[in-house]
Length: 152
Image 1 (cartoon, rainbow, N blue to C red):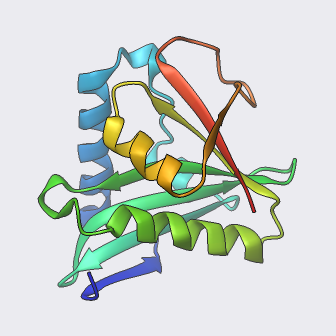
Image 2: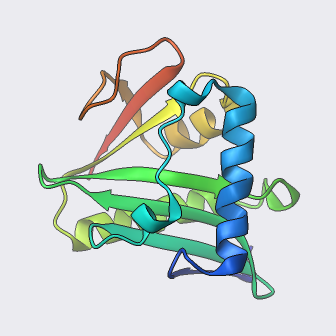
């Protein structure tokens, strides 16, 4: 979708917080609360997070965050594309931009945790070169989670 712009933005904007809330609702419909590892909007505005927004016609339609870990990897967080625009490669473009930013930050890999009920996300991550790995950081090893990594 050439008419979609992806830029770093403050996640605390009202239209963007509505997008994050839609993601929260989507995830809490799929998983129990203790299986959702969500960063709140204030955490997304922290110094170690780069937050990207995809806009179509000026309206936010997708988002993704890169959390820079002191161990030298970047963690993909809060990846979401509104259902009305899915299938237009916005998710792939967001992932590409996160990888570009991770390289600028000097990170050696991207890691993420996603859920077993998100087939579309799993397809996207695998197509982008992510492979499964074990839990990292302080994530619990639970059957609802899938952990993935991509070397940069």
